[in-house]
Image 1 (tube, chains in turn red, green):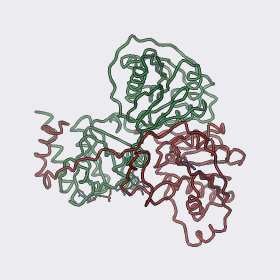
Image 2 (tube, each protein chain N blue to C red):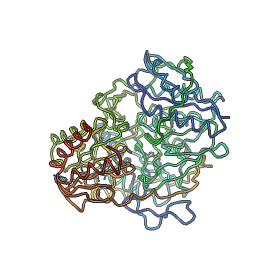
Image 3 (cartoon, helix red, strand yellow):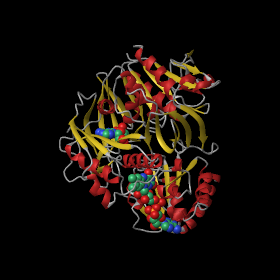
Image 4 (cartoon, protein in one colour):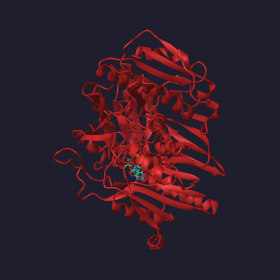
Amino acid sequence: MKIAVCIKRVPVMEVKFAITADKSRYEETGLKYDINDFDLWAIEAALQLKEKAGTGSVHVVCVGPNAAQEQIRKAMAMGADSGALLETDTRNYDGLAVARVLAAELKDGGYDLVLFGRIAIDSMNQMTGPMVAELLDMPVVTNVFKLDINGATGRAERVLEGASEVVEFPLPAVLTIDDGLNKERLPSLKGIMAAKKKPLEVKPANLGDAAVTVRSMALPAERAAGRIVGEGADAVPELVRLLQTEAKVL
Amino acid sequence: MANVLVMAESRAGELRKVALEAVTAARQLAEQSGGGEVHAVLAGGSGIGAKAEALAQHGADKVLVLEHDGFALYNPEALTSTLAGLLKSGTYTYGVFSATSHGRDLSPRVAARLGVGLVPDLTGFAVENGAVVGQHPINNAKVIATLALSGSPTLLSVRPAAFTPAPDARALVTEAITSASEPTASRVKVVELKQGNTDKIDLNDAPVIVAGGRGLKTADNFKLCEDLADAFGNAAVGATRAVTDDGWRPHTDQIGQTGRNVSPDLYIAAGISGAIQHLAGMRTSRTIVAINKDKEAPIFKIADYGIIGDALEVLPALTAAVKAAKAS
Ligand SMILES: Cc1cc2nc3c(=O)[nH]c(=O)nc-3n(C[C@H](O)[C@H](O)[C@H](O)COP(=O)(O)OP(=O)(O)OC[C@H]3O[C@@H](n4cnc5c(N)ncnc54)[C@H](O)[C@@H]3O)c2cc1C
Ligand SMILES: Nc1ncnc2c1ncn2[C@@H]1O[C@H](COP(=O)(O)O)[C@@H](O)[C@H]1O
């Protein structure tokens, strides 16, 4: 089982973001970075499939700045065998531009599966996986939270709003991984040592002109601090009164 | 003058509310571009054509009906070739999708097939010299980016509940269309749709959501949330990840960063701590009520109204009070 996983370096979100004075971007100084959550679950899925097959390889691919080697090494410490960094300093919101770079890199890899996260929590684009699949003319199943691979075919369950659907597909295929499929493993000390010696190729990426451009950025309107209505069931009448007269939702 | 093609989503033979929202957004796009026609694609199994009327009522000048057994369940590959074909014809300046699970599966496929960009999950937009300039939440919705896209055609998706369906009736005009590729030849095959409880309204359609967290202690106690939802009559029950991870509620009910994004008129959070990953999916709700026994719980920082106390006692009292209020 030969598997590629596309991973993105994203800011750790447990911070209050600040917008630069010219409103063109968010302030990056002081931010910490990690692998996108969904991509961790994609890596985990790849490792489990390889382990189950008893043979194969997991290759991670990242389009990002030089510092993203850190995230590739983390994936290797989890167990990925090799990695490639397609280096660029451009922060890109044009999903198709990123998808083209990834598709060109993956095209001749002979992968049985190419895994993505459902969504990158920074861009929130939720488009790269299906775009790459389309560019490579591969079948794709998005938002996968249950997966069963059996030889040359797969069966997955994908999340819908308030429902789900069961999908059958042939391999090779592209999948985008959703929350619920697994929990990622932590890198072991042995894994961290081994990762240092695994092959990581770094080469420049050319994203071309972006079709999607950023006009400005802003912070969402703050919610005004609310009020404590009271304690316990005794507070219910007052809450109901407020919902009727003030919030007008009842 | 710019014509707009809009994908009108249906599920199990029923039009979804998001379809009307998308048609409303498409209508706005056409008006802002100096007027133009809105054509809605309605795909489904036999009988789907009968659902076209609501689209005309909301501003679709024409409904393109793709009625075939091969579309009774979602058929992404055949829809991609059909939509790409329509959008390539030169008739349309814009293509509009819903930012739903299906819409966010389909729109990138169509964009890549056509070699054009896509701005996703817009909460609002304006047209400037033909370019779409729209608001899209990024960084776990902690930052709002205003993005611009021009292209021919220009594709976008609109966030569920961000646009309110606006009646704008026209005479119903339908046109039967056929699939651009053989529907049964798709490699990716949806073989089963597992509907949640179809008597209950969907989280994205519900004006009121009663959400429960680990503070409810057991799966059985979610009955208290369901009772309150029933008292409102127009409410759905949601959950935190802690709860869906423990299997107390189905995974599809999870609200938050990695779950569903909702913005109802009223969100009641019972026994929910208010972790940022949860807030990411519900902070745009109009009114938020929190019930938590810990007065330091972060949920109180974003709640309009808070009750400090045991949810297992407060919920039944609230249910009784809502019933009484509804009855009076
Ligand atoms: C990558 C990632 C993604 C995530 N995505 C999501 C997501 O999409 N959605 C999500 O919800 N979470 C998500 N989480 C998990 C999130 O961080 C929290 O762990 C989770 O939201 C906590 O759920 P909870 O509030 O039910 O439980 P807890 O945090 O355990 O809170 C329980 C609360 O109940 C209160 N309580 C206890 N007993 C009572 C009682 N009798 N009456 C009233 N109150 C009581 C407690 O005071 C406490 O505040 C994610 C986490 C990660 C790392
Ligand atoms: N720069 C990137 N490098 C590698 N993979 C990426 C990159 N951007 C996005 N992806 C992949 O595409 C998924 C969806 O990203 P997005 O479409 O930006 O929401 C991510 O979870 C990654 O798997």
